[in-house]
Length: 403
Length: 229
Image (cartoon, rainbow over all chains, first blue to last red; front, side):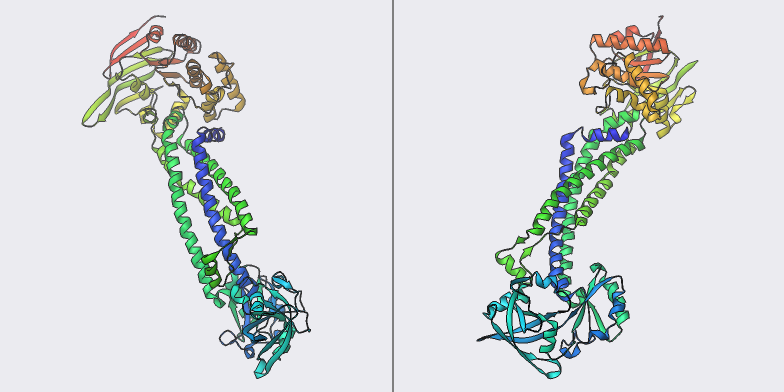
């Protein structure tokens, strides 16, 4: 009956209930929506820069990070790969070989960063999906793909020949003619201006270093747990190798994400404070309006504790409905902008490109975001229950019924 | 043997520098089965006396004995339990729970007492039929007339089988027909079930039906008249 009474009370003053539900729903919408946008941006940064390029963790030769020359590379057969794969946190390892060179066509040339992929494995999705024209290079056929902007700068069309000239392993000259088989969009404007992709064995041949790699990229199960995983890897590979996390390799990105998160937290605190006042106003009004009735209930034999339970149930019902409505409102928006990201124009776009990111803002569809914000709001409403509890605790039926 | 006994009951309200003596040394005994009206002008202390007897208000000094128990010594939940077990209240403004039906209003106190559903159901039906409202059990207060609401309030007050009922100006908002109807019901319950009724009232129609009339003025009892049947 208390539950039934609470449910009926919720709908007695429909206007007030709808105002409260709306306030909660819009708070969830704004808080979760904003967080979803920031999280989407962070996810995109992590995906395009970390997951697809440097990896969450890298195993490198011990001096490679400080002096990134081929001589500080290593051979994968020297690393206890099987032992590493036994670690639960590791999903896989990807060999990486990178080298710098000069690329040229006709009268144009530019410093180029050559990336490679292990042709013995299936070509990584991140490369296949990012090909914008042409095809992946075929192994052993002296083919390459270039970043869209680099190809455009070199005025190279698919099928044209590009000259590579640079330094190979241990002082050898690296030189070769490569056929442009396709172009790629790395979703990082700076990289598009300077990147070339080729199969790893072709790059090893180009630099005259068969089997050499510069790092092993570790695919981890839980990106939030990289520090712990790093320690375990370091124990296995020993001191001849250096294990680095993405935040050590790219501290600027880490700082950017942290400051974005901090900004988000401050915004949310402000939003929650406003919501707290709105909710408190409603609870205050409702409690004052119902003092008379609570006095009557007490007069006819309802104990204070039961009155508190009734009022708490009413508040929980309203909060949960508000939170659910908020989640239902934010979900389609997040889904829409996840698959149709906001494309920035003008100065904002330039700003993003200067930071090395695509000028788009995708939304995250991680359900935890909406659930977390809804939970916070339900908790706030629980805390606000202290006010009616205090009123009920001090309520004297005869005084309440004099109102 | 008296059911209710107040001894030198006082209630003082402070209003700024002034003290208002709502009750000023009231001593009264009310016996089992009485049908008593407490009358007097506004501010004479009628409602304050009823509230003190019902444990709704704490007197400044003095004692209220109900079945030989001094209820002024009871605190918090003890007092709520006492009211629930022994007293039925009928208020001037009916004070039904607006979101509950007539039947749910009547059954509410029994629910608080933990009465099993079947028993509760039977008793609420019986009581609503007794007050002539068997046909509007599922109506909510806003769908009833004032007279009907007050009869539901009486049924609610009777639901936990209290020894006595305190009714504060129960007919103040009722028309003549509803007043007569309500008084008939109360008189019948008093006679047939021996329930003690104490009214505070200005209403001559109620005063005429009472078998005892206590008149108050300035917080004091100035006359106490017993009448025959």
